Amino acid sequence: MTSSVARFPNPVFVALDTPDLGHALELAAAVRPYVGGLKVGLEFITALGPTAIRRIVDIGLPVFADTKFHDIPNTVAGAAKGIAGLGVAMFNVHASGGVAMMQAARNAAKTIAPDMLVIAVTVLTSLGPDDLIAVGLGRDANVQAKRLAAQAAKAGLDGVVCSAHELSGVREAAPGLMTVVPGIRPAGAELADQRRVMTPAEARNAGADILVIGRPITAAADPAAAASAICEHLVRTMG
Image (tube, rainbow, N blue to C red):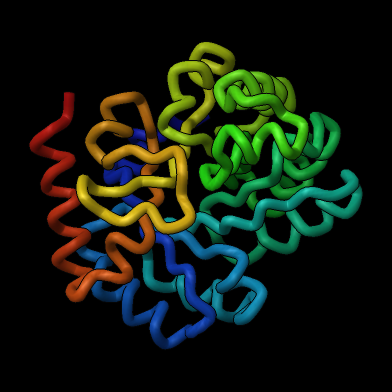
């Protein structure tokens, strides 16, 4: 597996979570000189479709398609082939779909794009202890994240999505996997619907390979300046 540091030397991926293609393209063009990649999520994908994803790919930065596929293996394999044909650098599935589903996604995607990175979501960063109990997972997100990271490694995936707070446990359970961390908030930023968050520098120094940052950049008065400031701060504070 290619080192994430070599493949993505700048760890900041900006989340273009909008159903407005013009706005997404404007944001992408503004932050392009400062960041390492772009992320398109379900709001973008379902509203705008494959052609719009290709437009984002054409910007020239690696694109993470935050698809979060979770279905029976055959269905996920078909979806994986579809997303792999759009030129994105990586996409994700839910690790809770099981090893067979993850393997189906990986194998199908790599028949279309051999260098495609397939990663698995462990525990959503919007979930707090009470939420985890309500869905039957117990209070400790770290335990669940470790368990699912181990399953992702068993399935031969390239990485996992986890909160920065679960990085240590995930690296213990699956030391060879790339870690993609959402829920990143600069000091003083609003949490919105996120619960388990860290600052960019804290997450990077905790071992995150890729930092997915949305509203602190995209909702800023000057997204380019916000992206530049975050990346400059990361360089200054690397542990």
